[in-house]
Image (spheres, rainbow over the protein chains, first blue to last red):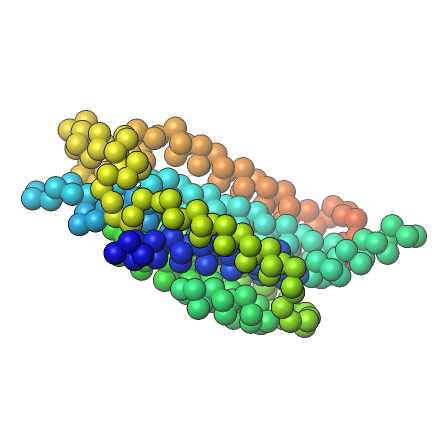
Length: 120
Length: 181
């Protein structure tokens, strides 16, 4: 039981590290955004896991139900999901704009173009 | 879920990556239901799996669908990731057990919400009453964030067809993106 109790947190860490790896190792900007959202979801899962109470139900008041999960993390994560989409939209808009300016969305090509412009 | 995320890291076709991230979000929503967070699951399914995927597809249609072929696994980022993950897993050994009703997160302010919100607010869904009433200012802040992001997107992609921009190569500017935000 002790080990099972930590399984959720480990899933969170695995997901978080996959997202982290995508963000720092992949060169494509759209893919970086996907990695960022995977990272975000891992944090959400972590909060929801912390709010879970054994034997509890969803936090909706009803007759005959005594044990609820913690509603506070749910509220936080609701807000965070929506804010996450807002930041994703902004990032994607930047990617479109970068593509307008540089004609590519690979970060090493962008760096090469910028370097070439500096040399002139 | 981890498998989908891993596949998203490896596949080179960006269209497939975006669809995989949509599937990933839906799986996350299912996980939230099993963790009793139904409101969060709703939002994740609608916003995370729906709108995010749509936005990313719109971006793909404006950029390219294939990622440039490159070398396989890079060693240094992998080492950083593994080291960070190991430290985090070491950290979990101090966490309270999963579902423990006496964990610090459950005993502070949450019981008050659960006991009193039915009387004070009169909405059976505790998440709703906390979101809209007790933490109303936070939700207002959230709306401000979305508003700011929408303005940012409009500034970046706005209808400035006649405006000169340095290094501009394409005049195709999406009006799709504006509608979706």
